[in-house]
Image (cartoon, rainbow, N blue to C red):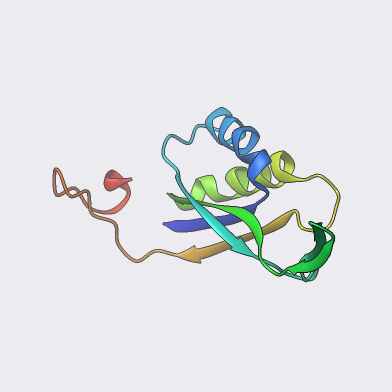
Length: 112
């Protein structure tokens, strides 16, 4: 099992969700996040004063899935989230040792 985490622009969330459903994934977890990468934030003008916005709004999407689904999920996220501009985000893939469904006690891939 793998965990796929994607940090994306908030306005791309619906497209990413639809793309993941099209490849057969049912459950995702979404968290609002703030952060910056190479873009290092930006400056804004507010009431005549310029100030730096260090942390930009992002959305973190998390999915736990079987190994056979990873490539299609990553590609679906990448295509749906891409704008071609700086700040499109990142995708991280990590190993999951165990998953347990609390309601039934199912374990492993049956739990996801």
